Image (cartoon, rainbow over all chains, first blue to last red; front, side):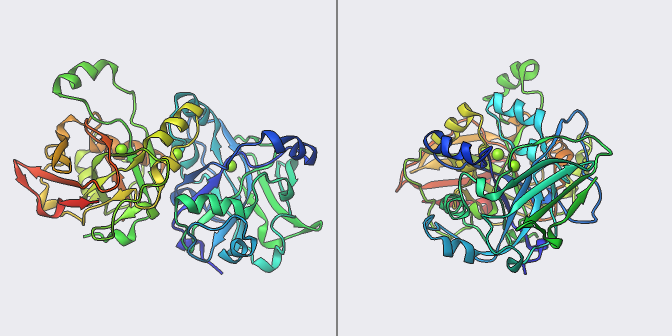
Length: 220
Length: 220
Ligand SMILES: [Mg+2]
Ligand SMILES: [Mg+2]
Ligand SMILES: [Mg+2]
């Protein structure tokens, strides 16, 4: 399995979940024409046991639980129709939280400035350890969840992804060659919200209702 | 000297040059309050001899010649007043061209979307080889130039930087820890413009009117 120490870049998809399966049907005409994406710096990665998420002064800090793909192959211009090629390019998975300085991001959006500061502070990318592909037979049919102080805030199936993994890898790799060790975050389901110092986030993955042990993530 | 193969991340400053020294004086009241920055993926690096810049379909491709810093130390929360610490953190320099899909960037700005696609295509970061610090005794007093098909398009002193290197490294490292091998692009002087396939860009650095041999960069 890939070591997270080999990470070259982290590419993240924005707005990639419907609110519900009804919403998916609704969106079919109106959904974004293509996925858009941004980078988080490798310096933002927080590995298990590496301590709490830091909250920079004046920052309105939000969680976004996401399924992360760890690439095992070089991928360039992947055919978005080729589901097998997409799955073959994945070495393993991880659970991730795309921590976001929401007020900084909103300011950046308003001014047309890059998102990098809002997404890129040190510790803004808590990751579980690598999860083997055996534990996740179908990445488009697992449940992601995140609780804050024991209260469920996010809990949805990856079936609600607007753009599925082959399309995501296709679109990114038309722009940027993906290398082994690169990480791709696939977007977050509804329920994102704020955390303050002292809050405990717990996140995980369920496959057919069963907890995936390697996916368990607890961060202060 | 640092090898460019060790690059972890590439962080770039936006809008960092005055048009002239008069303009600097004018700007002193009105200039941006702080530098903003974005990332280019390491996959966009084009090393000397690695071939032409690719122009993706439908892209309005612009050059931006910039002085690049190659970090030699881990830098976190650098004091922007500490010029010596900033210079000590630099292992070596490089000349770079921050290739930009201008129409894609303008669309992203309008929609409040990330800049990563417009800045991040493969080959969008031509770099010279590393330039030793001996060749650049004062990075705030060198001339950057870029010609297209022999015609000078950019040619200005780094004295026109709005935010100097200690401030740049201070601001970035307050957000993201910089690691040895990371690259920082320091912004581009006036004169940016389009190139089309077949155009030849030549860029370089002059110190006291003398060409720095290692800085010479030629890209198709
Ligand atoms: Mg960005
Ligand atoms: Mg996200
Ligand atoms: Mg630039």
